[in-house]
Image (cartoon, rainbow, N blue to C red; front, side, top):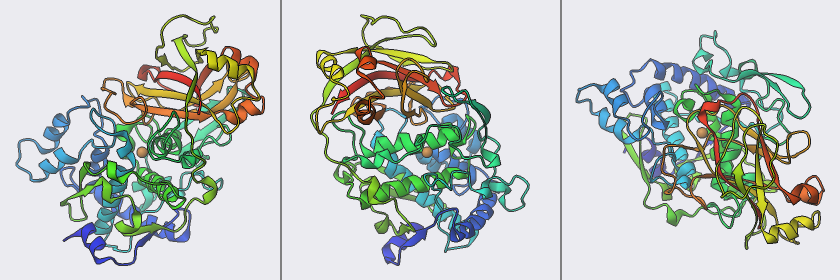
Length: 492
Ligand SMILES: [Cu+2]
């Protein structure tokens, strides 16, 4: 019984994953850099090669997302290579982007993927003590890409360097101040962004799945910090886009930390709905390049899988009080064009809002309950209730490039910032979204605006005719047509 299964079966002491900034983590990064260089030298058809592992997340380049055959033919030709079947099973399996996949498999699938990759690094490096470090970008002192990933000319660490990381000048839409973003020069990845733009709000979720109009833990984490960090680190040829993200060696440390956020939520009382996962099996390659299959219901606990982290996020981030009874307060009507003045409330039916490089506004129409509650602000919502802005069914036609700042109000200056939305986890626009998990299908983002209403930052006057404004947090690609399917304000 090779690789992973042997380690689990022997029930030895769990291995420990370390912070990339720590001395132990740095020792691991030296092993990692050596192994990545060796994997990059292997032929793509080898399951332990860098490209094969990258393609397991998603194959790069223009493609029909529903078929990987052209890429498989390119790599294997007509040969009877036994690994071709493994490629057919494994490539482009990042959960979840395609029809009939389940959005809630995001965390189990990536846990298995990273675990098997870690085993390959052990085998390739010949260092059985290797564990994959994590990058803790929530720590204010660790917001720069770890230095090992920024050394294009270093004989050892050049394997961890990628040119496709963010480098641009960003102008804050509120203050007009400019920032030189250069991830490979070590600028903090959230430089110039609003405070708390990368956050652990997801850990306050009381359920794993979305429920009653609030984000569940999985969808919350998928958006932030997961999607936001992808956007902040890489461009559309790197971390900023699903088909190329796993070619950046920092991808794996990012997902090691995403895995740590999940383990932290469980440690703080969050429950995985394992019984819903028993029909999901996925195949990966182990340290010897042989197929190994996992059932999602068996990967809910890292200790059972043989590893722990050297530290976890604490109880202050843990699940909050239960949220039930949803009341719909406002819904968007026809979207308005970029930078157009806000029109009077339209009578058109609910429609999608397409975002772009400029300012985009969506005007919401209040329900009768909403009108009454909004007039009561700042004494709304009712005691014990929350007010939540939901952006649902996020889709994209290509790499969007950066997250968007979201405001209640006309623009960045007069409106109130409520958070950022990432389109990294969004579904491709040509897919059928009906089969996905989530309250309304697809990928949703939720912003709790209770405190902003209570403090008066979002006033009764602003809520009399609610407008949601979007401005990119960096350069975005209009052609990708980032689209919000529906916008709602709810009391939950
Ligand atoms: Cu990711």
